[in-house]
Length: 209
Length: 209
DNA sequence: GAGAGTAATGACAGCTTCTGACAATTGACA
DNA sequence: TGTCAATTGTCAGAAGCTGTCATTACTCTC
Figure 1 (cartoon, chains in turn cyan, orange, purple, yellow):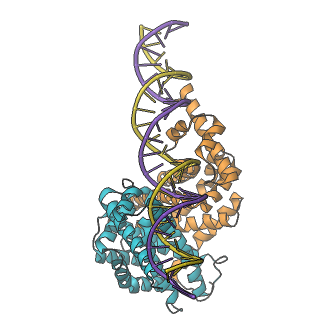
Figure 2 (cartoon, rainbow over the protein chains, first blue to last red):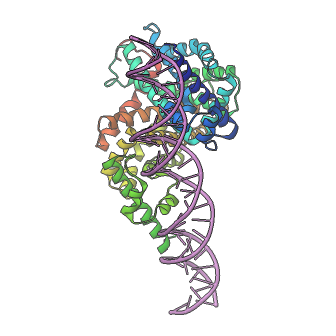
Figure 3 (cartoon, chains in turn yellow, purple, cyan, orange):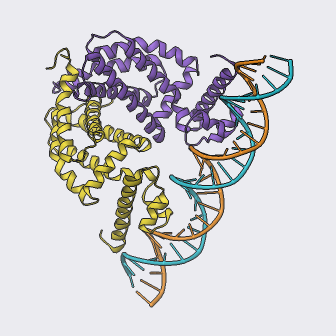
């Protein structure tokens, strides 16, 4: 598992990720070419494309890792709780593990700045949304499994997850648009938004209650 | 407004759209080159890129038109109703106008097949999601305006629209995945999903109620 | 209805992303 | 050490997209 060859691969992959993110953050995504990235790591362009299917993939790598961690935590927890509360709980529980996993790969600062680059770069945002949709689909199936419901017949898991993910994205987006740099602020905002889901859908909008 | 030059432009633009969609539907999006499209309409490649910023844009043109019609209807209606019910109502009211607008540009069949191509082509789906997000943002501001709320302070419009759009997308996606071809079926499914939003969020999941 | 002015188009050269093919290198393992 | 397989580099090239500039097509005025 940890042969020299394996370690070397890991190193070049990580180096490519960090180099790419640094360039993206400083120059912008579109303005940095793959040639610039590979030059920093001193590998050929062809090698880059063996590690990452396209330029987007290297930009979204850390994000994908994060959502995978969340998904796996969702799968691991005990069933029984009402789904919306359960998802919120897992979100709360995984927050720290996510931070640690990110830092093992890249400086946290860099990752937070990269989040903003993703939100503000059209092509990257598009790719990110698609990845989120794939994750959404997996979450639907997991929620359906946990509630003992057929996801192809009963729309409730789909609807619930769509609302949950939609709200989460709105929170992250809002956070990064405000130039957020602290993880704590992001967490607070997400929590706040989540708390508003039920009231927002249930109405009672005339006054602020 | 309707000079010869103007009409000619409209014609070539429409011809490019229809030709492109036909090729996308028969050969797939990735497999068709811009050269093939312009050959069908007999214009230069450069002309294509003057009408559409990129290959994606011609594929999403009709979709964008549809969502614009919906948005404008939302803006036009009288205020006062609870937002979720209002959005559902507008959706119901615009359905026919949308069908007519589409048919004025391209065969309805072609458009429905194109919807499926969008859902099943990763790069297209990504671009489509991004466009949806832009529309979502506009809807947020409009809902906030109608309810007399500051969208940068009060998260409720964001949350509500995120849930609404998320559910709509889930419905369309589900419909196209099942190989849907009838507009009626899509409408019914969307209506069904919408009705499930409140119960799904509110819980009471133990049994089917 | 002829001519000046402007908008649209075509032709071409060039950049960037990404892929296929094959040779060269490097680590794994007997 | 030598063989095998995985990884990499090099090269050629397709496709998306852009800038530039000459040419064509429409419009508007006189």
